[in-house]
Length: 403
Image 1 (cartoon, one colour):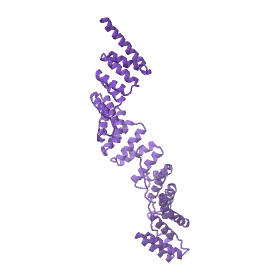
Image 2 (cartoon, helix red, strand yellow; image 1 turned 120 degrees about the vertical axis):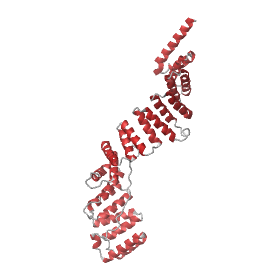
Image 3 (cartoon, helix red, strand yellow; image 1 turned 45 degrees about the horizontal axis):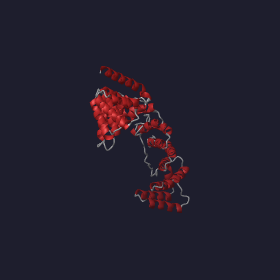
Image 4 (tube, one colour; image 1 turned 90 degrees about the vertical axis):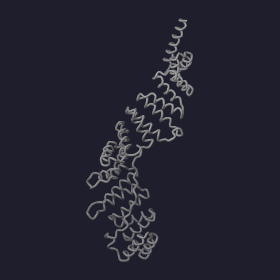
């Protein structure tokens, strides 16, 4: 499926935790050091903040308190040095495994280091250990854990968290949670669940073209082409379609037996290409011709084929043109088209057979024989070619007898 959802988690930090038990029980010297360091950080003076805290630690070798380690780790991460921040967050947690902000920041650091599974585990721990003032959990942490697992290629680990978040048991369900769960179902090839969820998303936000696009592709994967065409049509009303999207819709219309709609879509796609000749889009004209043939509009089909031939002539285009002219009993034109098809691909037995048949219709027996004798050498055409040659012999014998 094209255009699948991609999620990027932006690492976020808890910078201060001065209201924690660890901070309250700090010696005055450590409290002062942390306070002054945080002031420098608020001003963006991270190098000075780092230096200030290191001076404190050099004077107090036993000053590795949780807020001190936590603040120094934050300084490193804010300077873009996640590798230095990680061990400091781990030292912080070794001293206080219940310190949720450190778990949260460790998750962000690990995410930045592309250690996505470990990041997910850290966010899970942060979720388990955090508690808001009202006694509820910070659901964003569980969401970030799920995203980390998704990016790591482990959708099965993300699934229970996202299903919990979207269950309605944790309050308002956010759109991004539903989107992430949808991606999870796609990655796990749970197409039925994905379909149910996308319908839910459409009910919530029916004017979002993205959801209709995904619904169309899910239906295509299930070979529900009529439903896919309907979804893509609605999507085209909500957002201007690209050439490829328009071509896809046209192909779907052809598949479900709506050739007139297909022709309209192919014409629109061709119009999006500007100078179609420079982009070699003869294939679009060929599909357009097939649509006109199916909708019983031979003149328009011939126009489309002539446009295609003008851009990039090949044997198949002339053969198709010949067949359209045959159906209209325009034998002279059909004969010329098949002659040209043979010139471009002399090894096509069907072109020889049809060229011979058309030549027969205009009483050009010599030309008909020439093509039919070539057609005999091709297994699929041998029987018909012989029958036509015998018919020519009969006609010519009758003419001789009459004279």
